Image 1: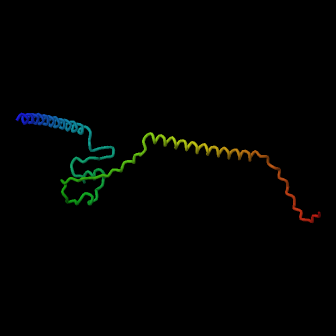
Image 2 (image 1 turned 180 degrees about the horizontal axis):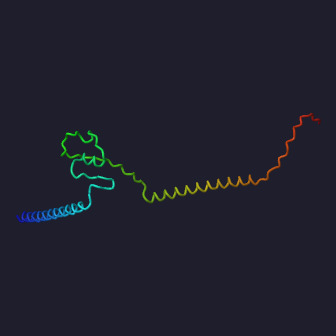
Image 3 (image 1 turned 180 degrees about the vertical axis):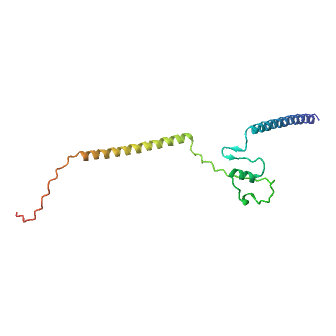
Length: 161
């Protein structure tokens, strides 16, 4: 019996704490609703930078018309004679997240340093080739030009030996 009494006391204390929490939550919600309604009286919640974005009264169809400025196709929202009180559910699909690297941070750092080294070697090799080509071009341009002599006519006569 003592154990039951102890459990009963615990349940009463728990129920009392639950009631106090519920009352605090209700008063907080009431205060937030009053605060939001006073703010919404100052600022119109239906106007935004892109135009009308909320509908004070009406259905989801009215909200869609207000957002797009056009009437939605009938098949997207059911028949026009349907029940307006019926809640509509809209679904969205998120893009899959970008695949994360399978390498650890240290492995990525090592890989990045190796790639930088390879790029540096390729750049040095390309620069050496360009330097060699420039040197050859300079040598060719600085080579003395031979004076071009008029070409002698070939002699097809008899040659005696």
